[in-house]
Image 1 (cartoon, rainbow, N blue to C red):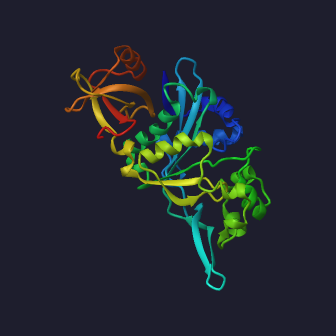
Image 2: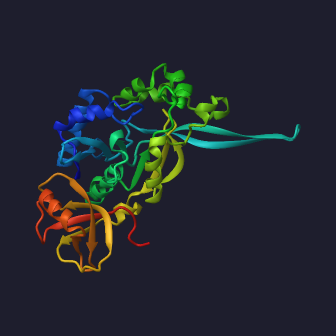
Image 3: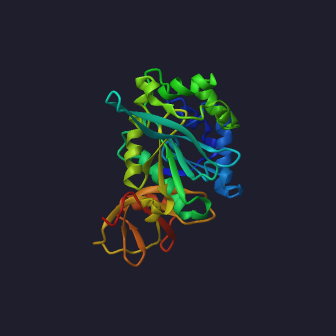
Length: 349
């Protein structure tokens, strides 16, 4: 059984292993940095951090039989403040025509922008390669758990959500856009600049070009990576599109990965998360797949993937009697307990 839960300090060694995955920029491959991230997450879930922009919630997928951590995901309460702006390249196009010679061109452009009153951000979705083809679809569970948590703790999050997705990397595991722009203007490698961003973003204002960048002058590899997603990010891209996220012609100024935006209350799993009572349900009620979370404020977040039956009067029952016994034990669940259920996809179609 897979349990999606709030990260704990004891998970650090497992998460370090995940950070070693080649090309994985979502997790810093540094024990002290990871311990700081875990501590912030613990305090965020506990509610001891009052500043929205300081909260970061990290989720892990735990194999309850082996104790192994098979993946992570994250939600940041707010991404973009006066002290730490949200930076992006606005992707545009410029048409030029010369009547004198009867020739015209359409040029792609990039223009640095920033936001100091930013949205909630989801990210750091990492799944161990050995677990990516499992039938229980751990990546989907990790992704939807974030939206379930947002729905059940709505006042902790903004009215918009952004997802910054990883672009294709070159054969050396590097970002072609960073090599073409970032390195030339900062004289730093990607990881060095990324670590510096966590402490101070002033160098972006100071060193990045503040006018239009014509993509015509970039190498083809960099030009073709703008707004694209990498092979392992494709499934995430398609899920986010399906549940309400849209590309807004904005990309990460470091690697060119696309930024997807959504109105928080219009995201399907947020909108369709509802509270139910664990109880009797007619056997002819339709079966629905999704995440079940016990509504117990004394416990930190934990959810399980399950097939359930939902009744019009607000009751929920597990579809599989064998799974029911396991879930009752894992969730310490009794009839009459309150549950949150998040369907994986719309129940209205």
